Image (cartoon, rainbow, N blue to C red; front, side, top):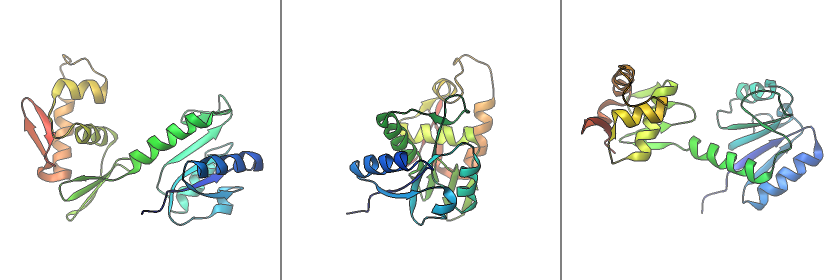
Length: 196
């Protein structure tokens, strides 16, 4: 049986840290508690981190220590985009954590592995970084596989465009993406699909 994911719960607030650890453990996670990311260091084997920090420097320290997994930031209301505002219900935090862990899980595409959160494709031919839109296209096509996605569906789902918008942006992104994932992206029925 595989080990449950290891989560870092870092907060200067001992009560919050303890409550997070207890709730996460109840959900089956292993937990490392820390007063700060400096105290946590580069905890080995972390799957994700929950940081209660007044600024983004905590996340930067964690990244500098070599952690490239999902980070959930808890912050006071109005402190910035990307943070989960306190007070926060555990059910909401749990849903965000589950989504972040799912997005971080590598996806097999032929002989390559796609890391959605890191926007990287690794294959025997090397490691390639994807743009945000390339990663979004690849993730959407992977979810939809083996069915193709029409041009209109991709424009709506990835860009939020009306399908009748006259643009070559999709084709440009598909062309670049094909170079990065080789022959796994095929044209079919006026759209595209992944050959998994």
